[in-house]
Amino acid sequence: MQLVKVGLCAFGMSGKIFHSPFIKQHPGFFLEGIVERTKNESRGKYPEAKIYRSVEEMLQNPEISLVVVNTPVQLHFEHAKLALEAGKNVIVEKPFTVDLQEAEALVKMAEEKGLFISVYQNRRFDRDFLKVKEIISKKVLGEIKEAEIRFDRFRNAPSGKVHKENADLKGAGALHDLGAHLIDQATQFFGFPEKLFADIASLRSPEFANDYFEILLYYPNELRVRLKSSILTKEDHYAYKIHGTMGSFLQERTDNQEVELIAGAIPKYAEDWQKPLQNPDGILNFLNAENQTERILTETTAGSYMNYYQAVYEHIVFGKTLPSPASEIIQNMKIIDAAQESSKSGKVVVLKSL
Image (tube, rainbow, N blue to C red):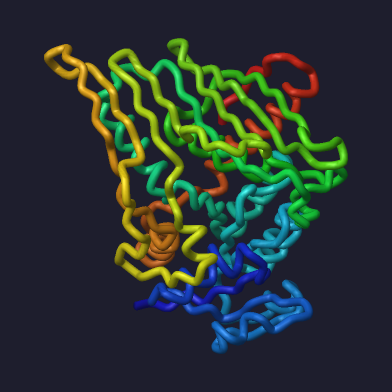
């Protein structure tokens, strides 16, 4: 296989859990370099990777052709720009950037240099997302009229992640963090909305960045899509509720890749590696062709973030479609910026499509 040498910009949780295990296990990638400013934690698991003390130093390595920008979001623009200037293709952790202006500048630069930027929208490879996508595509619910997508947590104390919780930092807060997932899923399911209304707040304290949001997306044909996240949700909700003219589908958030990776699981290339579910995790209630009600308990099949890296590899080597290209994720950044505007003004904001 053609070998693609990769540089990782940080070795925090994102580097340890979401990127390095998949790069290591994929036969088409080689983890050439890792930035650790003061520590040498990566040496135990990735002795073959060179340790660099800065992103700038790593980018001087001519062997590296793909750079993963997984530093705090406030540094995404700076580090992605440096990587592009060094002639590297780039994967950027979500959220892409702190605002639309930065995102558009990076897309323009990549296009001018003939390089690519892909945004790591890993939740597209979650088992629950894939099941909802399957149900919608089968059209068993008729015309979709209402949908709700949630991503909740319970955290009544600070996490210690300043770049995510400091109210004074641009790009901090749940809207950029979890909202980047929910907005991406909504646009994957239903496309770009016509307008939106948003309510964004910090439930715990004004000292924290936003930890609650509710965004109502308006689509043609009276479709309404609600995106919601709260930091103070002790009891789980259904993560997806899809309602149409012929029925409803409710899906739990059951993808466990993150938990299993944190516990030490090693992902496999071209194989399922998640533990199987013990129980059904969805409910499909619809009118069949005979206009009779059918209520079915459904079960998801395993997703794999390896499929993201496989798609990136196939783009590099075979020219296939790039997963979540930055030019596509611009629409998500437009929604994030518009949601902030709506919440501040208390008004519906009309969106301009790409």
